[in-house]
Length: 81
Image (cartoon, rainbow, N blue to C red; front, top):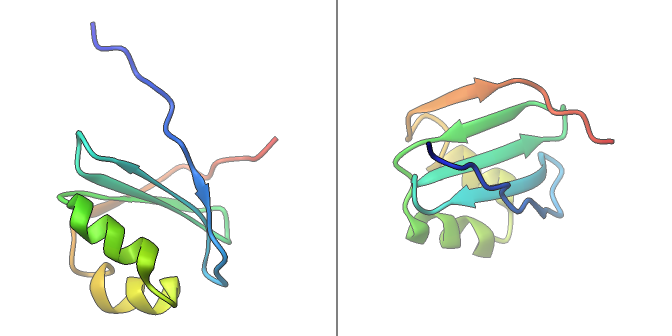
């Protein structure tokens, strides 16, 4: 049985995103939008993740380099306690 470990969410200073998490083992990027929606993007390399973190504008980087470039799925909205 595989044990799941909680990911560390990093808060983002962005008009589009609240936070980001990355699972290097699964090469999956998790983005929590300001709307509360959470999407995960697959086949996302650590280099891609580092580029996103270094981007001056996370929203612009997302629109130009992530959206429509990686397979993804929308997850359930997460409530913050």
